[in-house]
Amino acid sequence: MMPGGRRVQPRLIIVDHSLRNVGGHHFEYAVQVGHAAVQRGMQVVLATHRRFRVPPDAGPFSVRPLFSFRGYSKQTIFGSFDVPGTRAPETPGMFDALASRVRMSSFRRNLERLMRSTELRAGDHVFLPTVTELDLAALTQFLAEHAAETAPATWHLQFHYPIFSGNRETWSQSPVAEYAHELFRDALSVAGGHDLRFYAPTAHIAEHYDALNVGTFRELSYPGNPALEPVPEAEQSPLRVSLLGHARAEKGYGRLGELIRSIDSFAHGDARLVLQQRRNGQAPEIGLTAEVQNRSVSALPYPLSTEAYRQAVQRSSVGMLVYDRERYRARCSGLFVEYLCAGVPVIATAGTWMADQIEAEIQRHIASTVEGQATGGRSLEPGELDQGVSLDVPSGVAALAVGLRYADDGSGLRSLRVVQGEQTASTVIGRSGAGIRFGMLPLERGGRTIRLRLGRAFDEPAAAVSDLRLHWIAGRPGGVPCGAVGLLAESPGQTRRLLDEVLRHWPHYRQSAVGFAENWRARHSPATIIDTLLGAPVSEEIEPAREAMR
Image (cartoon, rainbow, N blue to C red):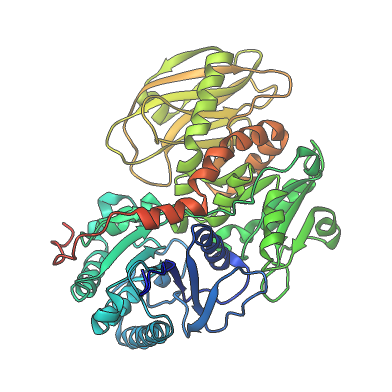
């Protein structure tokens, strides 16, 4: 309360130094969370990169364009992974250390400018949604130097990017482990007396930082636009295969030609690829004739306004997210969240956080199909499938499913592979959830003999399995879908087959995605983000950093 009894309006101060343009996920994140805070009766201050220009429809926010550097930097752990698949950063050398100090000093000075214009008071919440380890070091130095002015607020720090590769068993041997532990330990040792709360956008990334033994990191679900909802199917003609977002190689733009050829030859209806141009207004290089591009491709500008972006997502028929697995093993995709909020079926990369979100729906669908349409089968031995087995396909069978039970050691995935004539298809059998896990694949018409093998997925150690059983799935008019909500690609080379499957059975995938959307929207509501920030338990006073990873 202010003197005289006047109630002080609580404030949410969002600090995102990577927010420098209208459009894109930094902008959407800040706007959606900011609006949710306003609806909770809070004032919102938005501190951004100095290049940010406030659009007239941004919201009732007080905007401070202050920061000189974005959070993205080769000097950070994640930023040093320049080449997809390269995940072995070392401690920064002399040049990198100097560049890091320059960025940290600038970040600290701009925080001081922000605090001079925004005097902190009890009840204020300062939220940094995309923090790196260098930002943490600069922030805690700033807090130590301005303890009296900064202590009244609650500080929420979200670490947006992973810091390890591979399975958890390998993390302690990573060159990142000791370096990151020491950096976090030293940074947090000077921030005593402040209420610091730590988050990550996925439980997978939270595990990365928890492994450093320097504090507790909570999952903070990525916010979707509350206005995203399924549109009538009548608006889904032609079918739109969407590859939205910034054009980057790690997001599958290197295989655009193959994707377009698949759409152009789609024999079950009309379909087009919808993508966004690069920032310079040029469409990504495709390597196809102008005739094919004009017939099968629609290009949208980048970035789009919030409303135009919402419409592009909602009007999508299929969302393509076959991203580099190593880069996205633990990461959240904002587009993935938004597609599912809008009831849009997705094709995503297996063995990632994205895959884990829809794996249960795929498993439920296959289990139901096995129960209702299996026409027989046989038990299998793990050694038999490790070597591969030839089988005769019974008449009237359209697909096969293999069920198995993973050993309870939490590591490794198996890939089910079927060779039929000159065609080869495979699928990763997910392990989220308990009990029997299934993989299901369609069979070519007229093929009577197949070669079936169960291998390891992604060149990782083969997981031990038991209780293997093959189920033959009877055909039915219209065919047999092999998934629900979406499908998962073991490799980019599977994209064409999976896209054909989803387009062929699009009403089924659409219906299952719309059913999935209701609970998904609630989980990813910006209001839920605000509830988590405001309702998180007060952290204990920072203790000396615990023992490094063993």
